[in-house]
Image (tube, rainbow, N blue to C red; front, side, top):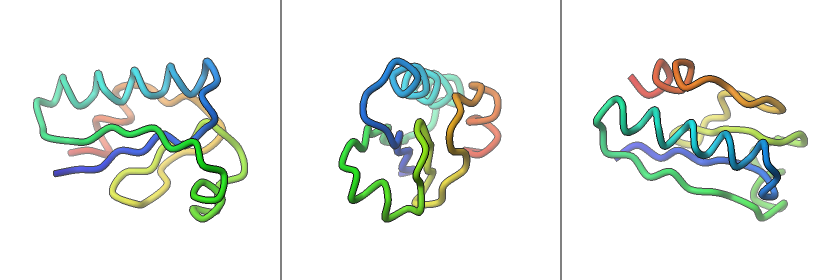
Length: 77
């Protein structure tokens, strides 16, 4: 199962990124866990200092922006 983590403190942009990640998983019809990470220790452990960010299977794919559903789908393929 793929693991998608939304790294951020729960701001509007973080919530939008989470919604887009869930939509990408749904459109691809794959099994993936979409999880919000709000613990700054965990977030900084990824080397991320700007949110929202997205990590897929432990690898940060984007930081400081809300990426498109299509971008997320590409990373999940």
